[in-house]
Structure formats: structure tokens, C-alpha cells
Image (cartoon, rainbow, N blue to C red; front, side, top):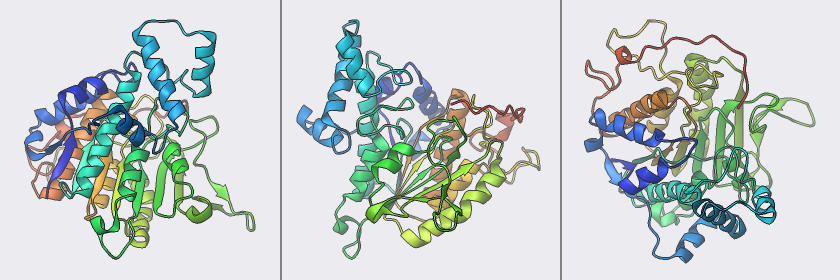
Length: 390
């Protein structure tokens, strides 16, 4: 059994071409390499298409052709350093290609790279080349069919889930339909993925996140059952009713409380759904050191070492990943948010090491030479600021 990871020189260059995220992807991959994890991983090259038509066919599985064309045009305008005409501005505004999703010279290629990476990862799972595949360049969960949103231009998570759920039953089991469980651990609600599969009975989405008035994206809050006015976190419609789950949490939650909140839900979803695949969006903006300062999660992995304070709990992120991997279901792990780049790299390196440990049985996190020992990462609990700005 093997663990795959999406990377390559061109992929690295494109993932580092966004003004918002800069060299974050390079920082993550360099740290993974520095801890000698790369030899334990199988390289999954990003998907390549033999013609523009094939690319359009793949991307427009979810996104509208008009939106894809507008995104390509936005890139060209920035490459040519042309000012947008009034008509261009109206066009871009109609697709929300402005404000938090501005144009830049590689905006289309950058966005497409994440799609190429996540589709390649999905194919590796379908073909059983890997038990788990990681794509730290993906996880852009806010993008809608014809709308950019929250620094997300193309929704690689939706396209990967669609590829997995579209795999023929014989590729999984001749006697059952393919079902996908999508788990979103980002600080922000995974609205784009939820909306894409709102009517699908074969894709179940679960997002645990912060929600409060004015906090982006403003969705994923508690619903009220009309007949008894009880709050629930079930959504979906048509054949997909009760296939979208949300768990909005208040600010200040720590690893232990976060884990206690989601653990029983994850276990229940796995038992009821019995997914053929799991896709996990592992946005790192729940970390206590993230500029949002809303959740107080860490990257701690208490072990047999005495290198951490007795009050430290297992990282909520690592708890969730460890639980999901224990199901022994083919799993795709994606990146996402995370605006303290060094600590995002630390967390994702630990997730990578944990994945290798769980799948291959090699010990990286529980020895004196463990990956990213707590000794190398001094955590200081930040003061609770009360901010909820996105």
C-alpha cells in the first residue's frame, strides 16, 4: 500500500504564482522533503490533456464555459498589461472576478493546476495505484459554477469528487454504487462543494467551521426544522436531502473540544454511508496562530516523548485525519486555507507524516527523532481577540 503526493517542477511554479498565497506550496513541499518524507511517497504527476477541448470537457463538468472563457481572458489581459475596458469590467464583475478574486498574469494557469493535481489524485485512487493521495496545491472549495469566491477560482475539490463518484461500480465493487464522503476541516464553510452536490444522494458533505454574522461566506449555519423549531445541521434537497451536514462552531474552540464535537459525527457518517472514497479538505486556518485567531487548534502530536506540556491535547486536525484513515477507505487529502505559511507548512508536514505512518506502518511521529517535534515548535496560546473578520 502506498501514499501518493502531487508535485512536479511546473506544478510547484504555478502553485506559487498567486499573489495571495505566494510561495506557501514551496514551503510545504520543502519542509516535507527536509524531513525525508519524499522517499516514502509516490509522486503523482498532475493530469495533462492532449488538447484544449479535453481540458474544457474536464473543467466544464462543473464550471460553465462562459466562466472558464472569462477566466482565460482575465489572464490574457494581465499578461498583455492592458487596462480593462468598461465592458471587460462588467464581464469580470458578473463572474465575481474582482475584490477577493482579482486577476494576475497566471490566474487561469494557477487555477487550472490545482484541478490537474486533484484529478490526477482521484485517478490514482480509482486505479488503486495509491491508498491515499495528498494534494497540498488543491482544496479551493469556495468557487461556484460561474463565480469565483474567497480566493478560489476553479473548484478542484468538486471536480475530484465528481470524478470519484462517476467511477463505474466495477472499479470499486460490482455490487454497489460509488459513494463519496467529503469532509471539510477549513475554518470557513465549504459552500462551493456543498452547493455542487446539493441534490446528489451519492455525495455526502460534512463541513465543520466557524459561522457568525458577517463571517465569510455566511452559509453553513444552523437550520430550523419548521414543525418543531429545533436546530439541526442537515441540508440538501431533492434526492440529496439530508446529504449535506454542517457543524458551525463558536470562536475560541480548542483541540479537545473540536475533536469531541466532530468525532461521533465522523463515526456515524462512515457507518451509515460506507463510502467508497473519502475526500478531506484540510484548510489550516483553524490553527491558533493563523491571522484569523478564531479557533485555537494546534499541530500537536503527544507521543511517548516528554516534549510537550501535559495539558496539550492531540491536534484536532491530526485526530480527524487519523480517524478517517483508520477506516481503510481510499482517501484524497487536499489543502485549502492557511495564512500563517510557516505553521501551515508544519501542520501539513505532520499530516503527511501521519498518513505515511497510518498507511505504511512506518513510525515518524512517535520516536525521539519524530517529524516536527514539539521541541521545534513552541506554541503560545494567543489572547482571544473576538474578531470574526475573514
